[in-house]
Length: 207
Image (cartoon, rainbow, N blue to C red):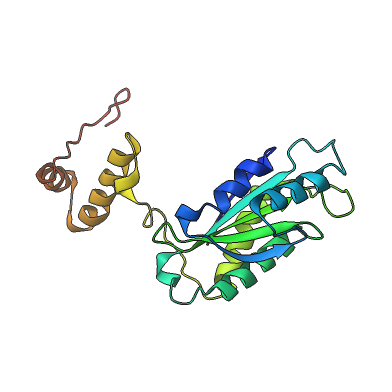
């Protein structure tokens, strides 16, 4: 489980994105907004943000992404439970929010949109939010028995652009080749078979 945190000014844009029909969105939790239409949801957020105009970035948007290996166990109810635990630990309380689940990718993921101006007009702090979020994600991943991804293994190489695509292809090649080689010469030969050349950089008299 990993979280991506974004803050902004435009509730209209993020609400339209989260509720986009092409993403087969299911709205799994709502608090404090009118659900008559997308427009009423947006107006609800904007109205409350007006309680504290000093908050320039009143839009909170967090996506929670899970491993595809957890797909069978992540029902809407389970994802809603995890999202609420995450929000409580992050201090995202006493405020408006919507939580939408998207089905446009192979891995389960949800989007949380919340108002950084709470129901009393106070600001929901974003101090050290990414650091706190990382710790909370690890804690909840363990608590709920979710899959712990190891390093780069879940990166979708075919979706990357250069130069990142080549970097990850080299990483994959090294991961499978290094353990079979006893020295640099053997490694060099094995990588050459995969179209990867090695060059050595020398500094001073050191090799």
